[in-house]
Image (cartoon, rainbow, N blue to C red; front, side):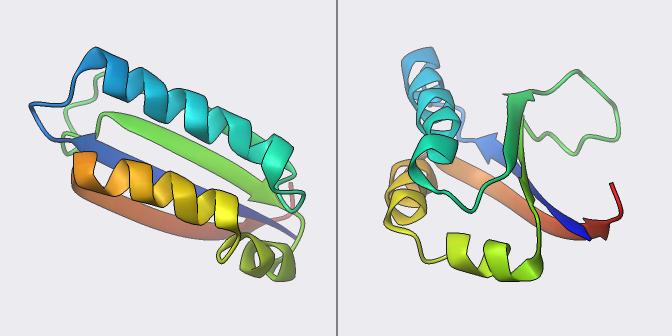
Length: 100
């Protein structure tokens, strides 16, 4: 069973387009740094009135819960979180298990 690790984030209003791009570049580099990531998709929101104001999202796919657990303490993720955290006013993380 695959694990889909879904992360949605809402930037603070003062975050610049350059800072947002830096975040996108950093998260896009994670699969090359973290072998546990099977696949990664990232992108900006397409407006939905039920989107609760989230700006961007990331979906990481892991082959198992064990691989997700390898990812969580990885230095590349810790560094990414340190870059991201000061820029956020909202964060939602949701993990689902699927057969696909």
